[in-house]
Length: 141
Image 1 (cartoon, helix red, strand yellow):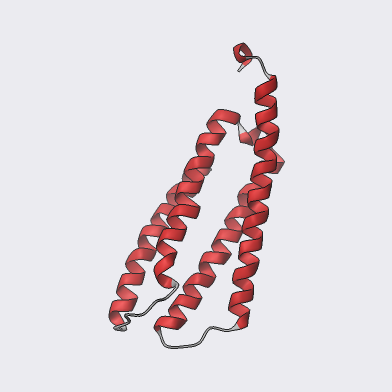
Image 2 (cartoon, one colour):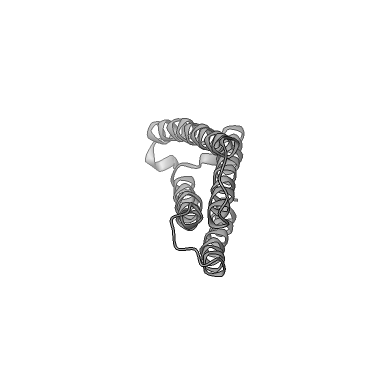
């Protein structure tokens, strides 16, 4: 599951970079837009993040707490998708010469809150697994 999430975010990150280039070129846009940040956000907060969690899974078996891991996984993904979607909407509006509104900012803020909750769930799970790992003799690991 973690590998597939990282892989999906890699594809979305690369495609978003291409989309940014083509949309701004088609509209002769040369200013700043959040659309240009989508590429790096998706690659860092999606692909690289889940590759890191995959390594932590290998070391600490995060999925041993199935329910907590599932809550983390879907909460984090939901927050990231919501945040990135609002970046795309806001950035596209900018490129097309329209103003963004408070609703878009509010939804983006909600996405960040959900991302934060996902990170908290990850660290709660990781803390439990590190404690179990530390208490387990090396021969039994």
